[in-house]
Length: 91
Image (tube, rainbow, N blue to C red; front, side):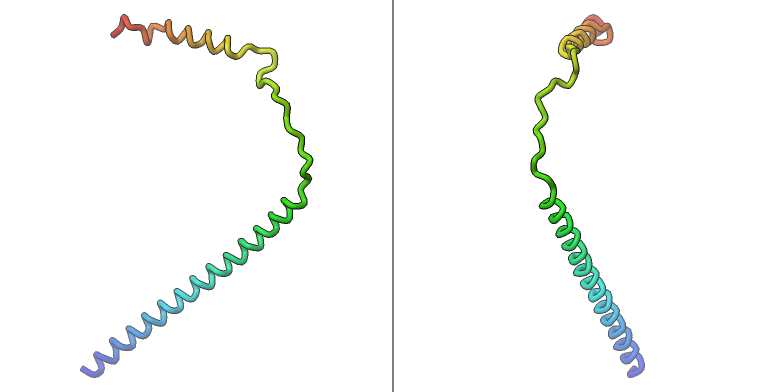
């Protein structure tokens, strides 16, 4: 019976040590990643601070050059309204 208890204690100790080692590794990995992300953020912040600030604002130019887009959409809408697929006669 004493041998059985000692085996259980050894197994429990190994499980606890394994859990502690795993948690320690995860904590170390987390803080290493935080440091890496902080360094990357600082590099990006430096790049943003050094970027030129005299960007020009684009003019409000129409997307289509010389085309009347609304007229094309109106024509398509009328075709859609008149299509036989959606006509009320089929219902």
